[in-house]
Length: 368
Image (cartoon, rainbow, N blue to C red):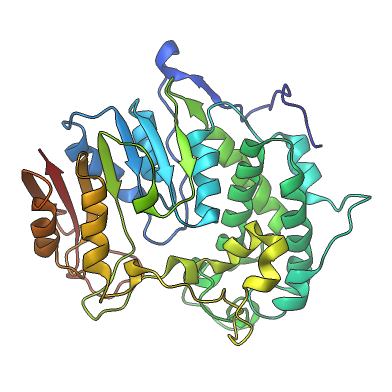
């Protein structure tokens, strides 16, 4: 195996137990994940700070920046996400208290190793779709090396680095269509960062691994990461933070599984061949139904979630033009909570890919 559990990582060592040493916890790493609340963390904490809670569930954890922020505030945090790729992000920077991916680990992951029979699934399946042939070959090797790292936390950081490297080299940071030509065409460009696109995968990977290392710390509490349907998460929590996929007023849902299917495949490398929808030009995963992207089922999904965590303070991040409407969500929340408050951002924040400049972030808080 690569590295040793006792190896000291120079220059990017995990932060010690900050509460015991009077240290300021590190900020969460920036990501290119669509829908991330990174830019809104201070605004969120303005409303969460006065709530009485010690344990918290981030039910749709995504990029893990909210979970990381709550951990930095000294809370016992449970990160959850139904996507396995996101689970590893939560494991890397929330559940992980003290492990880093060492320089020798990084070097080992990036090299083809003797004695390992490597599959070439990415090369065979995704030619001329997302990455160049050389990049696809690199992805095949790294995706098969990561599961061989010695600990869960090291594997999680390596997956984090791999995901961020892959996203950074994609137009729009997504895997929603076959569009490698946008990177490779010799044409004038009015968007994107060609230097980032052209930077070798290995350089991206090493930089993102060290970035994740720098976000690791202990707050003296037990934090964990789960990979479950939100309504099936066990145990009770003082506060449940809910940031579901968004359905626009036109009834179009944000399908994170569809946007980031390639990352899910990298995690499930051995099973990936059976998961692909080969009829699709961009080799997405076979469709999976979700009430969170279905305008006909979304209301009942919220009711079920609110009922499941009726004993917790409920906090919902939402958009003002979503389905259901914020007012309807407040009505459903009042069925289980004695007081429901609704707060709106002052309009300074807009979603990067959204053309609807009238939509703003809203926050619903239900307490007893």
